[in-house]
Image (cartoon, rainbow, N blue to C red; front, side, top):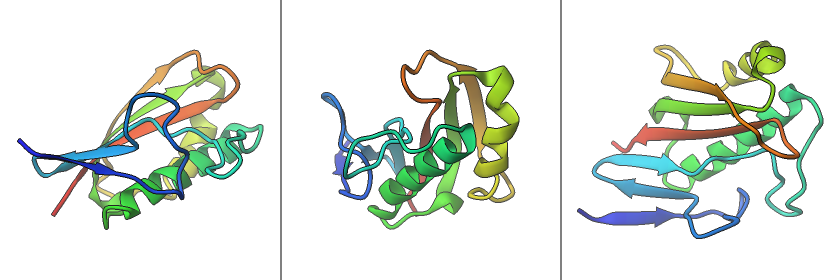
Length: 126
C-alpha cells in the first residue's frame, strides 16, 4: 500500500507528528481541522458559526490541495466543545458546504481547550 502526504499552506500546519492529510487506497483522510488561522495560528471567531466557517475553510483548503472538494467527502467526524448548545449553529454552517446525499457523520462532545469545533473527513479520490 502506498501513502501520499497532502500539505498546503492554506490550512494550519500540524501541531505534532501528523500530516494534514494522507491519500491511501483511493481515499483521502484528513487530520482534524480547527478554527485556527493558517498564518497566525490564532483561533478565528468566538461563536460556533464563526469557528465552524474557519474549520470548514481549512478543510476545503486541504481537500483542494489534492484536487478535491466537499462533493468528494463520504464521512465526517465532528467534535463539539458544547454539543447541546452548539449543534444547531454548527449545522447551519456545515450544510452550506455539503450536498445531498450528505456524507455519513459522527458528532461527539469533546474537550477542545480554547476552541469550539474540530472536524476531520474522509474523501473519495476519483
